Image (cartoon, rainbow, N blue to C red; front, top):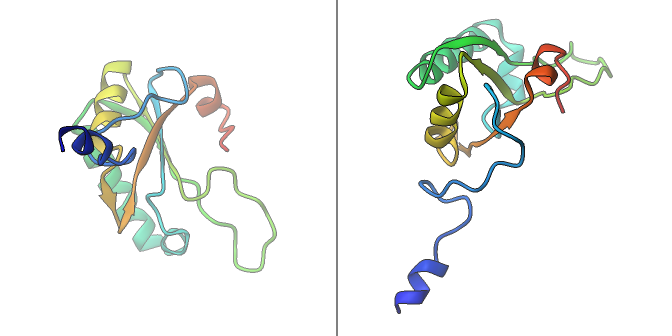
Length: 128
């Protein structure tokens, strides 16, 4: 029975932080957090932005944040990073603390995935 308990922990379970796919940086990419339709509404978008700044600010100083918005209805424009939140912290310590706290948490009924993004990709807004 002892070994079964270890095997029973899912890879995405809260409190179990998988290794980062990307090298540590001051920028976090938060995936599976947002409903794209909510981002179309200006009021919802403002509330989401405020909530994210407040939540991420608990772990370190937030320098910048980007939440890509969907194109106008009917547009075929591809928006890189749609549905993700990109947060730049003042230092790696803040980004690491936020990743540890946010990865695996539920937000809007979805399980958040948090990983690092290279600072250069953030500045260039080269989101995937």
